[in-house]
Amino acid sequence: MTTVFSLAALRRVVVAAAVTLAASTAMAEQPADYSTQVPLTLSGEGPWYRLEVPMALRLAARFGDLRDLRVFNAEGEAQAYALTLGSAEQSESSMATAVKWFPLYSAVDATSEVPQVRVERTTTGTIVEVGPQAVTSTDKQQVLRGWLLDASAIDAPLNKLSLDWTSEQDGFQRFTIEASDDLQTWSRWDDGQIARLAFADDRIEQRDTSLPGQRARYLRLLWLAPQKAPVLISAELYSTTHSSVAAPLSWSEALPTTLVKAGEYNLDLPVPLPLELLRVELAQANTLAPVSVSTRRESKDSWQPLARGLLYRLPENGKDVIHDELQLPGQWVQHLRLQVDSRGGGLGKNAPTVRVGLRATQLVFLARGTPPYVLALGNADGKANSLPLTTLIPGYDDKRLAKLGVAKAGAPLAVAPSAQAAAPVASVDWQRYGLWAVLLVGVGLLVGMALSLLRAQKT
Image (cartoon, rainbow, N blue to C red):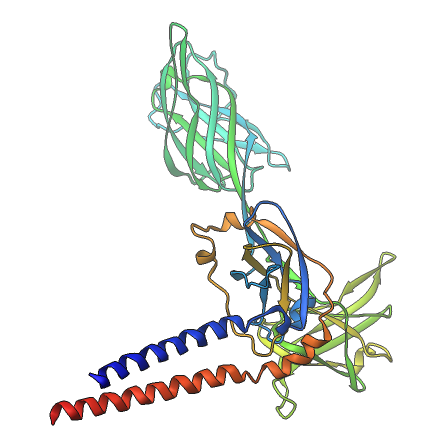
């Protein structure tokens, strides 16, 4: 009985120590542990706010992946947050274009169902005349078979046709839709139908016909009942255009390089970053510089090629034409070497400054507690603590990100010297080590008591 009691009591002690250890770990994360603190100004609708992390803050972090980033409220409580890379934005727009139409006639007793077409065009592509011969609508030997629409001015997929017409009587009119780029070869798209019905004071119209979203220079509409074909008043084609805006980039301020020898410069970043662009200062006019960029992990490692290209600042029509950027593959790099081919004349006596660019990172956090909120960076013991964006914002979709409130980073705060001085000491957390020792000793005693109890039962 005493053994069981002691075992239960010790179990409670171990559990209490584990809980205390967890609480101690949670309490260990405080704003004073971070060397860089930036106040945040909030605007818009909360409780979620987004901020594009400036490059200056990325360079102030202890880790390039921002694992040591935190947001604290006025009480010093860490806020839940997520990190997401900026992405290209896709947009879609629809435009209606009024097009010219031309009647297609054929003889009443013609054996061919499709009238022959002869076309004359100007240099702009506008149709001047269509038909096997000059005919008029009063020619009793001809019947209006359909209409030819000139869509050559539309350089986009066609997704809708809208017609207006007059006819002797209301009703339905069905027709086939064919497409061509040369007026010789036609492909069948679909069947269309327009309708106009009236009863008393009520009126129903169907003017629109869906198209398959393909490109075509010409459309041919052929009525299934030519004797009742209406006369067109207008024709509009709706086209859809898609545009893409490149993913936003975050740029650093001008960073100094170190002259190693003639035509060779080094750049060392505080942390590795996935660089996508390198912009080199071209201080002098009439500069032509073939360059190559290489990288290495440590000073003892050999340089590995990263990118090469031609930089220049040359006059054209009284203005300087400048190409000062090199595309980089986006791999994580910290140490860079820039080599300039001396045959181009070099970059001058002084070492150039450079700017580095990479895809912008968005910080999204859930504001809880009392403002003001502070963004903190620069903790050597920092560990990744971000949530997936879909977890941070239940029901999240891409369109919702732009509607979130906005946080703006201010000037960095002065961190108290006492906090900075205490940071190295804080790394040796004797209380935590003591609790771990108690926990391990308790587990050992539990195992020993359990073995002793088993031996007693066997005896």
